[in-house]
Image 1: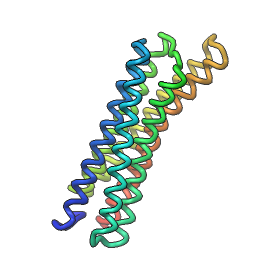
Image 2 (image 1 turned 135 degrees about the horizontal axis):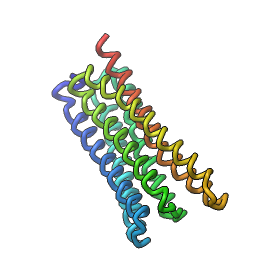
Image 3 (image 1 turned 45 degrees about the vertical axis):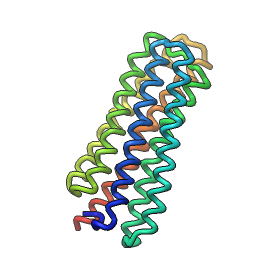
Length: 214
């Protein structure tokens, strides 16, 4: 649909890029779960490094896709739509890497009574990112389905917001020291940023798909 047979290489490269983004999210999940479970710090560090490596691979693959896009006979409008979409997806991987680095370097200790809340936030953010990736993939198969999935990303982002706000409310209602509260709040906000960026990327998918159905 989006590409001719000659340009299939572009679609293949974008698929590989999405796999790198998914790997980045999986590594972040492992990193945060290690931190929440009280695993040895060296395990947290290794998971954080794995997240960064996955983000770097995603970045390299995105650049390769961008170069290939410019080298193919795509209409300028189609090319710019795809590049904006890829940049939006890249911000999701960047946000995941940022959270992993925060976990690694700040060593924020999450109190036991808040760990389930952070786990719930992570689950909702993961779902948001996962659906965003599905929307991008569907852009090459079914425009209407891409729009539908993109709309679902917005609903999931709202649910992630709810989990984030609940954590912040609980943190500042606690008896923790102010500095600890700020670190816990910032961690929740950073995790929530992933869902925000996934929604923005899905918006690019929606716009691109709608433009090709009218």
